[in-house]
Image (cartoon, rainbow, N blue to C red; front, side):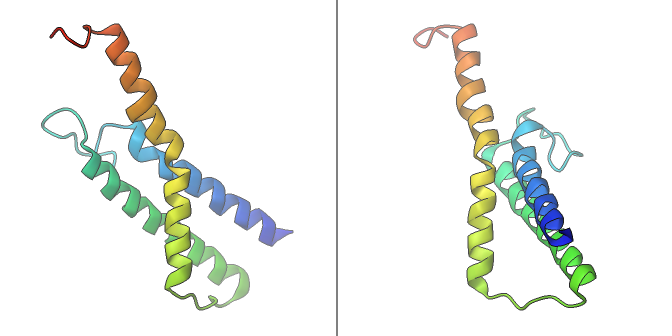
Length: 113
């Protein structure tokens, strides 16, 4: 039962961490860009950093629970990175599709401004 709980914690943490770059305008929660808006490149870099942080946490959990870490090949990291990007989809939709359309609808019409 403890193994399933650890998996649930890591998956939940990965989901939350994958969406954080799209919820806040500060880079790594500290630095505000001079333009006032965080560009997509910064968000992508944060996504990679959070992937490494969650991976490190999972590594520590595995080592503490089982005493050693099962060896993993590049395929494991490629699959988990893709899964992390899929987890980030709700934050991407919120930031770039849903929220962007709301601002455009409230602001000036497309042809004017």
